[in-house]
Length: 360
Image 1 (tube, rainbow, N blue to C red):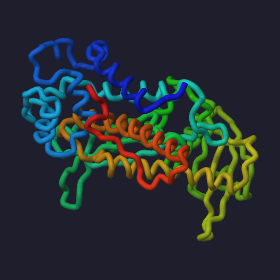
Image 2: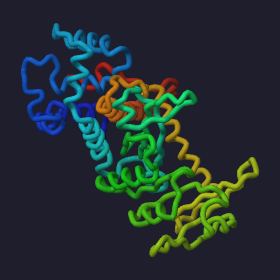
Image 3: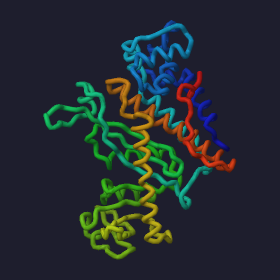
Image 4: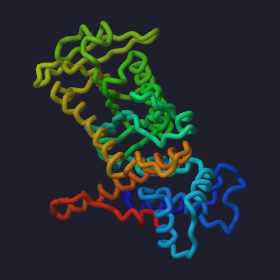
């Protein structure tokens, strides 16, 4: 089945306007039952998805003008209304998109693998007593408390989609968050996945966890600062036996000499694959794509420009942005494919009018 951007929009429209979707994702069963409300549940979802990048009141005025309803709404009223919507509504939309897109094997792969990168990033969030309590904070040089949060994602490098995401306290352990995201992905179904990790993730316990999930991985470890078995594996390409509690498994250690003269040490459970050191070097380099995606989220999609200063507003904005960025990736991919098939050079990246992203 060929999946298109318009298919994804139609799918989103059907869900957003489905009463079951509202019943599931409103905070109380007494919410959104008055027909005289200025903004219904589906309108609120679409408004948040549209992106609130200017002042909230300007966005609201423009929204009601766009709808031509003759109504208006104060920013205070909308801020109260959005407290009635679970952030899980936007997680649900993205989960449905991902499940739909990967329901067959008609997607890009790297040598047969779905190539996935995992990483986390710390972000500044609106600094209020509630956000500091919910997400945590750090002290600056003047001992001022500044609210922060950490978000992590699983990113499909070849297809440019974020499969799983999470935002939480900024002091959360990255490995534990990664395990949660991998387990969530497992519930949707692995697709011969190969995970790429940076130096913050390797541990014997993490190796054991990934082995138990029967997924492939490639990680960079700190040279001569990890474990005896791996630190002493200094050949260009060799197999070692690693023990973790009662578990014992084979790992492949790759030592790559960089142009600077430093050694980059990679660890993987790709034991049987006939990859050279250069293959592994190029494979690990692909992990850089997740850094590019983070820059896009923070720059183009203004992920850190939150439209509310409560924990629920921050979570709504975060998960809405993740979903929106996936829809835009699908539109961009279609434009790229169309340009290539027509023989034209794609000089500018395709952009979709954000205001008609999810038409009513």
